[in-house]
Length: 206
Ligand SMILES: Cc1cc2nc3c(=O)[nH]c(=O)nc-3n(C[C@H](O)[C@H](O)[C@H](O)COP(=O)(O)O)c2cc1C
Image (cartoon, rainbow, N blue to C red; front, side, top):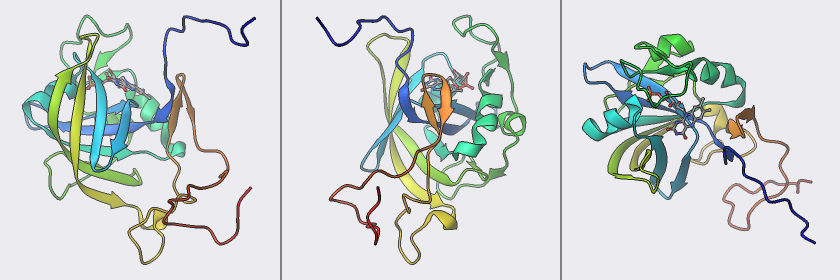
């Protein structure tokens, strides 16, 4: 007898960090969209985006973006963006309840801050910003989404996240906001560290 139950879940959002993507609209204004299908491979960040969203459209035409990482306490700002799209009219393929919103920063209650290397602004209130450029965009297997490979050009971190005097993010100071089967979580207590860590803790944890 199997120890597991075979299931047909409607989603497979098994817990990935939320990011807010700033991109440039056709008219020179800026869009801000939450997403959680994002992961890093060296200086490349790979994104999975719905093909019909404003963000995918923007990146196909204007590849500059900022990948803003919110802290766990900012989940209400993320959720304020959740029913919004920068696309007008709202595409028929969007789930019911979506509405067009051209001023997403204001709608989220987040401030814009100029970037150094790209045109879209950073979300000043988020502790980490990755200025980046979309260099390869291709359809996913379903045809409903695109896989976007972005190259990170510049990283900005809130000073309180840094190991003093280094370029290292202190893993004890930073927590991503995790999207876990459509619920928001922060990190729990540290369990241990990799043998490759460059920020060892003096005392062992756990
Ligand atoms: C926490 C969260 C995570 C999301 N993750 C993704 C994602 O990984 N990919 C995606 O295409 N949409 C994701 N969405 C939905 C987009 O935010 C939504 O499609 C939005 O309308 C996109 O905005 P835009 O049309 O202005 O680009 C997520 C939404 C939330 C609230």
